[in-house]
Structure formats: C-alpha cells, structure tokens
Length: 586
Image 1 (cartoon, rainbow, N blue to C red):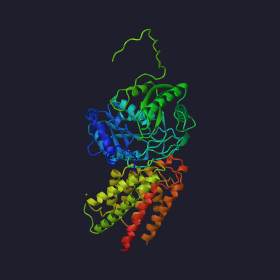
Image 2 (image 1 turned 60 degrees about the vertical axis):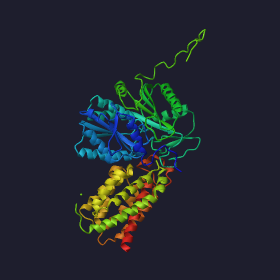
Image 3 (image 1 turned 90 degrees about the vertical axis):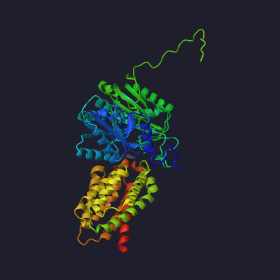
Image 4 (image 1 turned 135 degrees about the vertical axis):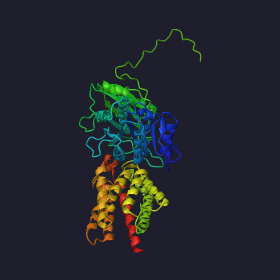
C-alpha cells in the first residue's frame, strides 16, 4: 500500500504543485507546454542578465519559490526527485532570450541528472547563438575525501540564487556574475541530518530505514542514506557533531569557519520537522557558533530546500564580508525568501528586563523517403521495442527495490516511464526503418520523457550510436555504434567500467560485440555472448564500490544488491536477443 499523499495523481503531482504556486502568485507565469515557471514581468529584463535554475520536484519551496526580482528569472521543474527534461530547459532559455536579455546563467545543483540535462540544453542554446553560462553548486560537507562526482548541491544553492540575483538586478554582466558566484560557492558548506527517510508519491517504501535510537548524518535531499549513523542525542549534541564535522580542517569538504569568522547561517527544514524542533535547532546552532567566537551576521530559519516530508534539517554556513552581506540583504520579491532583518544576529541584546510588578493591577477589558526494404526492418524494430517495453514494465518494482538501496528508489519508475512513452509512440505509427533515424528519434523521446540521469545517459548513448549507422548498417557498423555510444556515456556521465553503473553491463556487451568486425562473424553467437556478459557484469556490480552516480555517495558495505541501471540494461539486451532469435527461427 502506497504512503498517504494529498495528490490528485502521482503522475501529475509535480505539475499541480507548480500550477498552485503560480495560481497564487501574480508575479509568476507558466511556460505553455512545459513544467517551467517564469517571472510575469519578463519583458522588463531587456538588457539584463537572466538567471535560470531548477531540478526535481519534492524540494519545495525550491526552486520556484525563489523566482522574483532580485533572485531567479525562472525555474525548470522535473518530476519528483528527477532532473527536468532537456527540452523544457531549452524552452526556458529561449523564452528568456527572446525578451532581449544579454545573457543567461544556469545555476545547477551538482547531481548527475541535473548536470547532464542542463549541460545538454546549454550546449544546444549556445549553438543557437544564445550566450549561456552554467555554475554547478556543490556545497555538501558530508564527505571527508574527494569523490569522483564531486560534492552534492544542497541548500546553499539558495544563497547562490540570492547573490546572483542581486548582481543581475544591479546590472552586472554575465561573465562577472558567473565568476563572482563561483567564488561564493566555494566559501560555504552544508550538512544534513534526519530522524527518518521519506516516501516518494506512489511508493510504499521508505528510501532507507533507521532504528528507533539512530539518526542519519550527512544525507542528501533525495532520500539517499548519509555517510554514517549516530545514536539519538539532544539537539545541542547533534548540532555540535554537525558543526565539528563541517569545520574539520582535515576534511576536503570542510568550510573554513573559525574564531573571528563572520557567517550567514541557514537552518533548513528538510520537510517533516516541526517548527518547534526547528526553533530548538536554530537556538543550538547560534549558541554553539557564538561560543566558538564565530560572528553570525545573518540567520535564515525555515524551509528552503526540502526532501518531501523528511523529518530532518540541514545547516549551511557561508563566509561573508560586508560587500557580500549587501548582496544577501538586497531587496527581492521572491516569495520564499524570508523577511530577514538586515542587522547582525551576534552582538545584539536578546532579552528585556521583565517589568516590575505593579502595586495595583490595572483593569484590562477585551522528415524523408526510405528504401522499400526498410518497411520490413521497421516491423522488426517495432517487435523489438515492444518486447523491451514489456520487459521494463515487468521489472518496475524489482528495479525500484534495488534502487532503494542506493537512492530514491525510482529506477524502475523511470524505466517504466520510458517504456510507456515508447509504447505511445508505437501506437501513433511504426518506427523508421532506418536504424540511424530510429535511434535518433528514440534518443529525443527518452531525453524528453524518461527524465533523470538514465534518460540523459540513454539519450547520449543513442545519439552517438546513430552516427556510424548513417554510413552503413553492416555488422562492423553496429560494433562501431556500440563503441560510439559507450564513449559518449563515459565522456558526459563521468563513469567508467567498474564504477557500479549501467555502463558496466553495456561495456561488457560492447567488448563482445567487437567480434562483429571480423569477417564471417556469427551474429547470433556473438549476440548471445554479449548478452551473457552483460548479465554477468550486472550481477557483479553488487560487489563493486560505486564510483559514479548517486550510489557513489553510499558506503560500499550498504550496497549488497546489483546496480538497478546495470540490471535494466542487461534485461534490455536480453529482450532484443530473444526477439531477433524468434524472428530468425520463424
């Protein structure tokens, strides 16, 4: 049974949430046909730099709550905990560029899916002549050693929205804004803690489980587990542990806060903590920092970047000077930015003497033409795609279960979303008979409909694989296509064989497919070996240490199941082989 959620539908919850925000805020508008919110006074930005951000839904009020004069120009939202589609990001860029802005800065949290999709949209926009820059924010203080994928983007990203927005409102140019916020991003850190996990809409499973006396330390904002578990303790003790971890100079991800430093403090509700508890946390954080000689210049307390209903909080520290404080204090109309006093927290008198008891109490009252033989190829491709879709739909719950070990438990949902999109397209008509064209069209479909890092990676793979097939469709060309696809995934996804990702399965298959280049190659013998190698590689991922993707943030001792992406990729290859064998035997 799914957990209770006040939604109209699981599929439409992200759209409905964004529509509700826009409906209640006359300063915002939706971009038709896309899950994009923009300033309603967009035309007033002619001659200025625009700022776009976004990411998965489920982090409200981030990111759309920070749209407004002095902050973001617009936001692109994905499904829950899922990177937004490349097409929607590009549509937002175009919409902002068309009003005469002089440049666009994309502010992106450091997650694979967000980095890939915003990066792809940026490259396409630049190819159209639109000046676009991108800042990737990684403010996570959880990890003490360097991670291949870098530090995760957390609540500190909101401060980057504010600083960049103030600079843009002041008329600063794109190059200078990009450079200055890049410097600011390196001067902050964030650490989260939670009493429990969360459940994504439509799911009945928590993304991780804790004992009654445990607290998860160093977790992200997608329901993934943290770096370690600590025993339940008082708020003062937990805050002390967190600040010690964040400022430990032996950690590569520490923030250099020491006695005499001046900081902006953010106390962020991850979604399910009571306001009472959040106030206790804020008090503990201010007292502990001031006890260490740190000057709290400003304090923001509230919900800024949540993880659905997760009962936890994060602390963010940003080192500031007076010039940076002026940017933090600059006016904004963003609805989720707090009405914060523009005076230091430290150094002010916090108590007033109680009045003396009066002697007498007063009395108060109340596209082209295809060769004829491609018709048969198209029918066979349709059969292959149908089998792949049914395979992925059957695996949805299993893949989600595997994914809950390493993250938000939506790998099966993501692949099922792709399968349904392909089925819908097949109902509209058969696929192209040209293999290159078919792969290209499939790539566009997955980039738009699948979402997440899987959608981006499959899109990259198929786009690259299509290129060698434009010149030839013989067996060596298919081997070259596989190689091209794998290289694209490695280049942009930053994964390598052995990193415990979907690449492990595909890479193993690709090595076997090298034999297609040999004269008189036996197609089905080679394909069978390729599929068997992919399946073996998928199972082997359970013994690997994750080196890329969200699973790389989880201790290897917790990853006792195979990687869901690798399992899905191997299952796809098995489905393709079985259909081709049936067609050969018919």
